[in-house]
Length: 288
Image 1: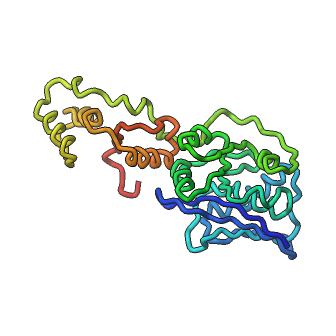
Image 2: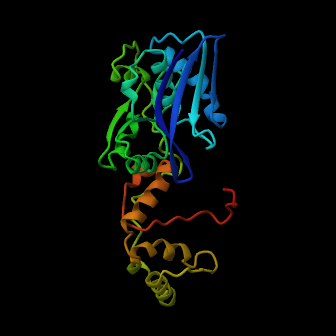
């Protein structure tokens, strides 16, 4: 019987919490189970992790493998825990040393071929790790640009589970597959322009009463309802309002950046003090 352990981080909205991932290899019929309130995508990690580990030349244990994710009362969502599960199993099997993963957060989704895919929400995760005093992190290589936005952490990027094994002092045989140069952290929500390109209120001709109302709302932090027929300039005026608002303070900048990180669009924006402008379609439902 052997136990391997490492750390991961779960997210509920913007709230992050440390997750301890433990793998237990015990005698019995071959079976791989994940416990600790995983959702459907995390339960499917069993097949991803098993195939990814075997892609490194690692012989999967022909016994019972149980992975526990604590605290068990907190729901675990998403595929960002895949690499931590793989690391804990490799540790329990002796492929990597137990001390190598001590006080280290491991994050990343794995493919069946062992490649490590980028994740969403890395920024709030790193801010929580810094707050909790955890300094070492292993993240997907394609998340390193986002990881560089937080100072004071020792962050290493990996492209393959085999790189993780070698990083921890083990031996692995693997080939990093040639994949199309696409970034899963970028979704259809990617911006078409830089966030600072909000336009200038001086570009608006006329509309003096409307511009005066925007100035009053911006100065006092008031809510504003804009009504009028299509083409009257409501969106044009609203899109230029960030340019007359006060810059975001540090806490507000991090909050906005964390939301963009969850959406996978932070690399295009970066951390900026410009207030965000979002224009959801008027037919969007509450659930959307």
